[in-house]
Image (cartoon, rainbow, N blue to C red; front, side, top):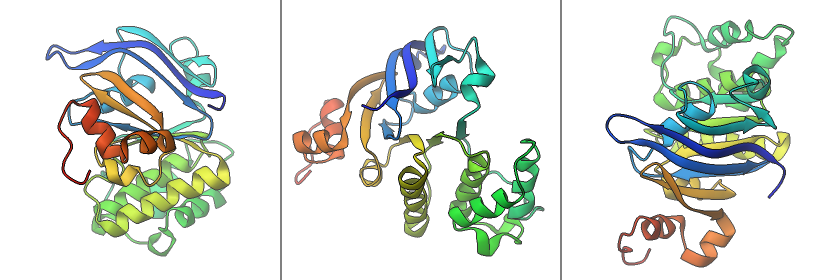
Length: 244
């Protein structure tokens, strides 16, 4: 593994329902595309909110780039971008106007960066269109464009292909691959679409009942299980489907 960028140790957060995260240990190395898989309610979104400080942990520690999230929040998070709840936009604004609103929060960030992220996410032809007419996939890409404005070294994506058609999925996949290859961006991606993430991830882990029960590099997992779907079913204790 490359140098650790995100280090999670003993992270715990349980809700009254009994769901949450329990004694989570996770490390994501520089340049990795880490896929976190699990069913609805497994704790994927909770984990992403915990490691970004959106909700407080009951125990454990999170470190970004060697900095404690609890003690050095601004320093820890300044190179992190995230898309946790995509799909919501100001319909009366154009794509460019929405990105300009975000860019103003980053003093010194050149206006040209707006054009760069529009181009990168394939939204340049739609920059002047009001977002009320955008498809879910276009809204997902716009949220990603906003997260990319300050040139983050690490990006968290929560179910980035959920609800997208094949063209939207292919576009998100292209952006992730391009950022990882050309700019060295590290990713942590939560998803239940295992087959899709198999196409882009370099490492993967299975989250069940708030615990990381299995992980490894994608090549190693494919050699052992044949597919990430088979890996997941094995981790979940479910019978493999014929041909899996």
